[in-house]
Length: 417
Image 1 (tube, helix red, strand yellow):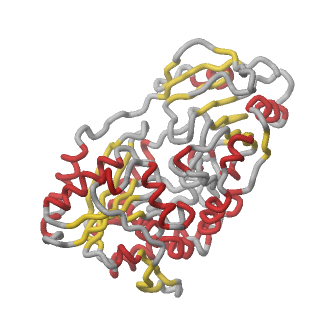
Image 2 (cartoon, rainbow, N blue to C red):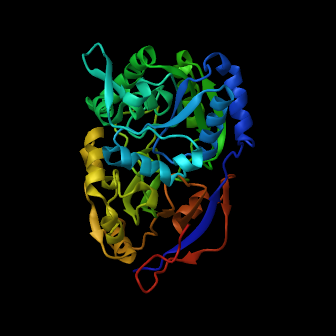
Image 3 (spheres, helix red, strand yellow):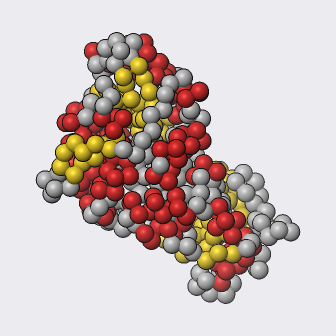
């Protein structure tokens, strides 16, 4: 293999963040007059999804305390569609991976795959909703607002998605995805509108994270404001969304992928793969080969999105729980996301194959980036050719001299984020 030299760099993003999460949540709930919504003895369900969210334990604990202050009886509702193998215990296991257990939170976790049919769309698709949620006295919907990994629109991932997909459990989530990307984009909000009209939703809490994945904004919303808050925070999210420093890449090496990082394991806003968008909405990167080295522990074997890779290691392959992966894949209907790419024994072999298949002329310096995952883009390694393109950018900081990209005796990369 020809000598390749890499430089360790930092991307500098805006780093505004909330310093006191409990106070911020208390202030937001006061703004929407939560005192008037929760009466003593009311059973209040609080949603928690399957994504890794900064401060999620503190956020949920703070909401629990706000409910208790008003003499309500809080409990946690796993709201993650078909994740966790589409079984209640699997979803509780996912929550435990984020430190959210009955012991740590001091409240019950009510997990079920049972649903109640609460209405229909105009196109006759039925609307299903989590049984424990439907029979609550009130529900507080909590979710991060972010760009979606399958489509572009005014509303993507946020409070409305948590209602339509998260609290739909497997049956409801499958129907939201029933008509593919167009149906997901066009019908998701319609599902949420039916739910807001029929289910005991009392408020929501929208979370926005900065480029470092830290809690940047917390906005409480009354049910009638869910669409407005989703739209406003999504517009802001798109302005501060971290990206790779260049869009022309020969080889992207991703150290880990998983559901805690993104719905499809790797964020398609970062690596490309979003099919439904207008040219002015999205400028996808051009990446010739994507190498993925491992699955996160938190994904519990769910390798949805592995199909976006061109080459994976045998270490990753052995960690795949196909039952869990396929349950999630069938629910979202995008079967190509779980196709198995080329499997190799070592990271050296993966890079060697990638270099032979990127169609560069002999002597061309390869354009390579190494990232930990698609959620952490403030730190990475870039090859010489990419460094020459970005060295003068104001938001790029070098963390040392060029280093040779080598391998240890097991064939693992010498450079890691």
